Length: 142
Image (cartoon, rainbow, N blue to C red; front, side):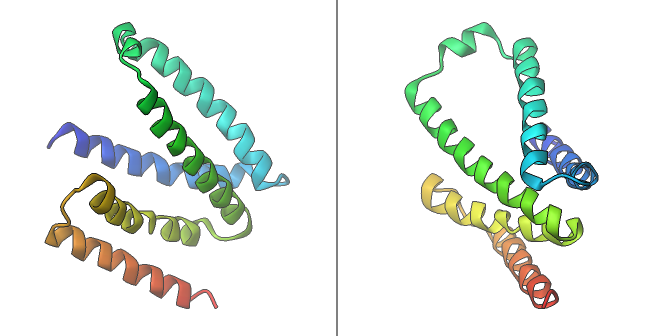
């Protein structure tokens, strides 16, 4: 199995834990405060990770377009996290996490238009099943 596939599954595993652990941490506080505290920890951990893992020469390769695109990604990540934390504070993590995974459909469509990635039959079937699942979930929450 290729490394990126292993990393993707590890990401999935930890993301699943993240939602449940975060819900436990939101007891008696707002989702907004919970997100703020969590983000401070994430910042410290990622900074420490970068300190030990990212070679010095790689920092020298950083250019303005990198910063602009990653900054835009930070804006969308922030908005996603704000709404995700508000949602898990008010709703069931199991339902919110399923709806959140609809982002896969958005990513497939945007990757096609912006990155010119192909939409293969397996990707199309998978995205369609996710979209169908979102429909089922939203109908069951009335």
